[in-house]
Length: 177
Image 1 (tube, rainbow, N blue to C red):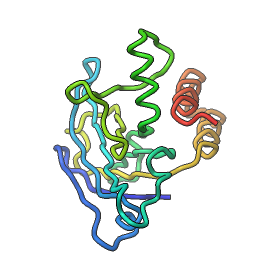
Image 2 (cartoon, helix red, strand yellow):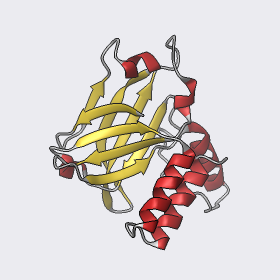
Image 3 (tube, helix red, strand yellow):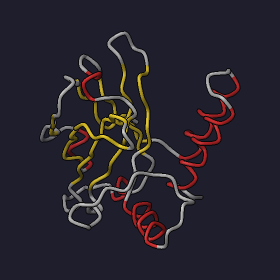
Image 4 (tube, rainbow, N blue to C red):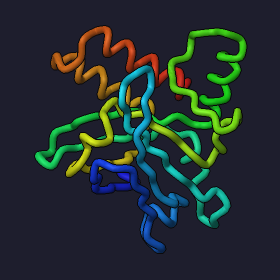
């Protein structure tokens, strides 16, 4: 289910949902995109904002599988990444504090604090400047749907075994059964 679709201009931006729209009624306030360098690589950070105090808010949006997708004007998929969520960030933070390295993810802190639960982040491996003229789509999914999609892409040869394993681990870590 697509929650939000936004045209990108290649620069940092923020888009709010329209009052009375389906995403707004679910509690989706909007999305912000901005550039960030992670491990020396330019990335596009997508930040979803929810109003968890709104009447009618769907609380499952706080931790259900959400995917950020960037599509070219020709309809080609440019990048796709899972959003993090509060429970995952807390596990990742605790592991990093204990100097572990099992979980895979980017941990963003503001003044040493984790982001609030009503914010979700995705880190797309594409420079923001390269997204001009593209479309950002935020899609709600199910864990089984994500894994089935990876297995189908692997079966058709679109993914290597290493890519397949990396994606499945990311899903399992963010959305354990």
